[in-house]
Length: 208
Image 1: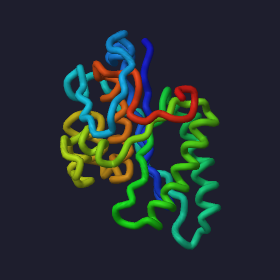
Image 2 (image 1 turned 180 degrees about the vertical axis):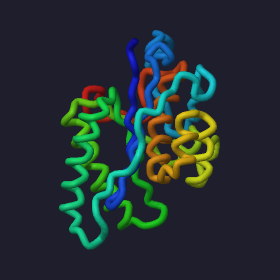
Image 3 (image 1 turned 30 degrees about the vertical axis):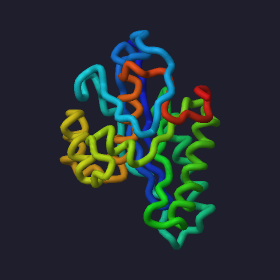
Image 4 (image 1 turned 90 degrees about the vertical axis):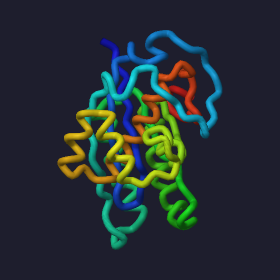
C-alpha cells in the first residue's frame, strides 16, 4: 500500500521539535485522484474529507537538542544539519512540512529561528524532499479552529484526533514535538482536502 509520510519540523536554535505522521495515500484527495490543483490562501481552514484522525499513524516524535547559549550558533546549526539529515534517512518521509518564523515577540529571535529554518530547508532540498511551509496561525487554526490557540490546546486537540498521539502526550511528549506534529497534521489535512494539489506555500525539493 502506498503511504504518505509527513515529517513536521518546529524550528529552534536550541531545541527543534519533530513529528512524523503517516496516512495511506488512498485516504488523501491526491491519492484518490480527487480535486484539481488550486491556489490555497494561508488564511484558509482546510477540512479533512476523512473525519478526524482516521487512518493516521504516529511514526515518531521528539526533539533535537542542539546545545544551550554557551554553544556557538554555527556549532548548533551544524548539529541541526547533521541531525536533520539523520532524521530524513531514518524516517524516510515523502514530504517535509516546516513552521514559518513568527516575528510577534522578538525580531532577533525570529532571525535566529530563520537561520535554523534555512538549515532545515537546505537539508530537505539536499534529500530531494517535497517541502511545505505554514504560518503558526494557520497551523493552530487547522488543528484547533483557533489561530491564537495556546500550545497546550494544540497538544490536547492532537491527542483527541490521533490515538497514538494521546498515548505519547500522556508520556510527557515535549511541546516542541507536539508543535511539530501539528505542522505535519496541517499538511495531511491539506492532502485530504478536495482542494488538494498544491500547498499554501511550497518550495524546494522535488515538489517545487
